[in-house]
Structure formats: C-alpha cells, structure tokens
Image (cartoon, rainbow, N blue to C red; front, side, top):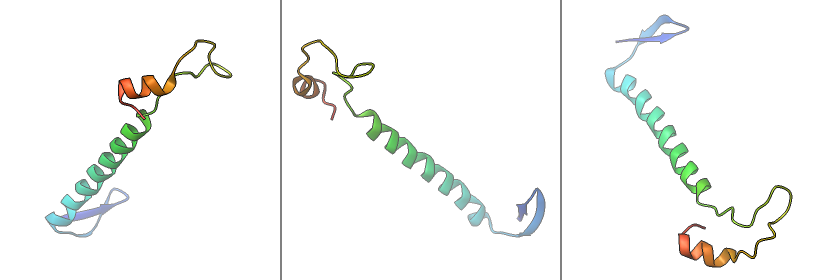
Length: 69
C-alpha cells in the first residue's frame, strides 16, 4: 500500500501502519472530548457581567444539589 506525502506517492507502508493513523486521530478526539467534559463541569452560579450577582445565591448548596464541581 503506498504512503503519500504532499499528495504524491512516497514509500510503501503496511495496512497496519495506515490504520494506526486513524487510531491516533481517534485518540486525539477522545482526549479532547474528555477535556471538554472536565471544563464543562464547573458552576458559573454567582457570576455576573463584571463582578458577582446581587442575588443571594448559596453557591455551595447549588453545587451539591446539581452535582457539578
């Protein structure tokens, strides 16, 4: 199976080597999805446009109730 570089045939590679490219691609995608899930697990309660909100929000109680960090 030919390997390509700059859209031209470069050198022969095995099918396993070709498939490892997709393993690496999906590995990157999986790590990005895990990182996105960690970043979404934050509570923005009590945040305002410039400073905090004037509403009496108990952030720790809402964090425990919703299960986010």
